[in-house]
Image 1: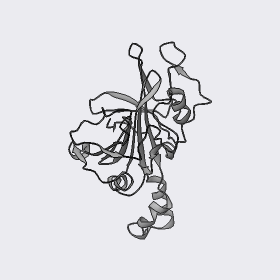
Image 2: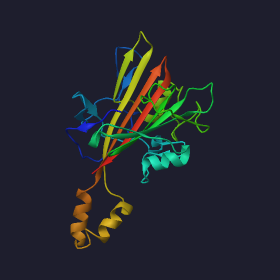
Image 3: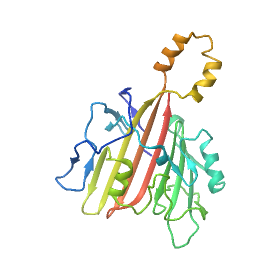
Image 4: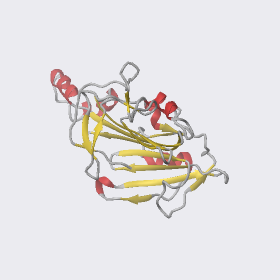
Length: 255
């Protein structure tokens, strides 16, 4: 999983990523390769290897984070939520501190199918990897078989294995970056997104009853306008001969 370490933030108000009215940037002079054009609201970050990359300040719909009854954005402990849907399984811890990750793996019960799904819970993020085979699972612990996993497994937004790049882009919009290996028929689309959000009434309620109860109405309005949290999203889609074989979706709420 790519860990995002933000070095610059832009806290402007953001809306859903909308590309239909923006000119398309094409790579390699070809017709198909497309990425989202640079925007003034973009910022830059570095990954764990020190590589700098662009971050778009926009959002995608929340149903992209829901799959088979599991919701990356839910308040419930993530691995507990996964176990309720797919059954209890031995999880694997990796990394250390803020870089740690608790992972669980499930695969289809159909012997003729190789579909796998991996769920990860980090310090501040939840994720899933939907894969056409078991190569994404790096641990010796076997993946639990489940009848709920089939090749047609999809997110609530309609992302699923086997779909084309155009179909995925129709749901998510143009990617932040794209790489291509023509010789091997490989294409990678990556989305690095961030949005600054205000707290909802539900999130504010316990604060208003406790820490903020001594504030005046004016002070409360100022505090609400100033404080909020950042949503960070990373999506990585791998294609072989224009067919989706790997989908990683990571969602993080910080602040």
